[in-house]
Image (cartoon, rainbow, N blue to C red; front, top):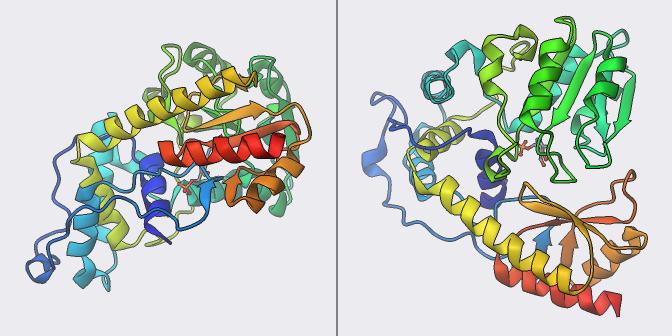
Length: 347
Ligand SMILES: Cc1ncc(COP(=O)(O)O)c(C=O)c1O
C-alpha cells in the first residue's frame, strides 16, 4: 500500500476533522525513540499521471505521518485499545454511539461485510447504474440477484424505482455517486428512508462526502438514530485495521487543515479543468466529488488506451455510460498533462 492510497482511503473513511486526540495508550507508546518526521508532499509518480482511481493527490495529514512513524515500535500489537479510542472519537464527532461505528480496512472492507451479511440467494442487492461496482461483485459471489436501476436524467438515484424492487433486500446508494460525481438530495433520501420497510437494509456510501458543496446535499448519518435498518454492524473481522492505520486515522482527526485544504484545492483544480473543457465544448456531469465524468462524444475505450500510451491513466469504462470518461482531479500540473494529452488524442 503506498502513501497515496493510504491518504485517499483515510480521507474517504474519516467523517470529519477536529477532535483532539491521543494516538495510542502510553503503555504501548514507544514514541520517544522514533525519529522526528517532517511532512513530505506526496511524491509525484515519476512518469505516469494517475487520474484513474479518485485518490487524494495531496497526501496524508502531517499529523498522520508522524503518528504512523511514532507507532512503528507497536506495529506488533493488536489494535484493540487504539481502535476503541478511535471509534469513540468518531462517535462523538458524529453524535452516534461508539457501537454504531464499524472500523474497516478501508471502506471497501465495509462494503464486502455488508454484501456478506445482507445479501444471498434469498436477498437481492439493488443498486444504481452506473455506480461503484465493488458491492455488486461481492453480492454476485454471494449468490445474490443484483438489480441495477438506471440513474435519473439528472444522474441521481431513482429512489422510487429502487424502492419498488427492494423487497427486503439490500439497497446500495452511493452519494455522491461514483462514477458520475452527481448526488441525490438529502430530502429525497430522507423521504425514501422513512418510507422503506424495516426489513430492507439501506446502505448509503458517503465516501466522497467531504467534497460535496451543493446546499441540497447532506450526510444521512443523523438518521441512523431513528432507522435501525440504516445501521450496519455485524460479522466484523477481528483486528482487520492495523494499529498504525488506527494511529494515522486518530491523528488525522486532530488536523484542522487536512479536509478544508483538500476540499479547497480540489474545487480550484476542478474549476480549472471544467473551464478548459467548456472552452473545448465538452459537456460533463456537474461534479460533487474529486472526479468528473466527461461526455467524450465517442466510445471511451480507445481514448482510455490512447491516453495510457501517453502515460496518462484515466478511469475505467462504466458500461452504462460508454461515451463518458471518468477523470480524477489531481494536482494542477497533472491536469495540465492530461489536457495536453487529451488534445493530442482528439486531434
Ligand atoms: C464510492 C466508493 N466507496 C468505497 C470505496 C472504497 O474505498 P476505500 O476502501 O479505499 O476506503 C471507493 C473507492 O474508490 C468508492 O469509490
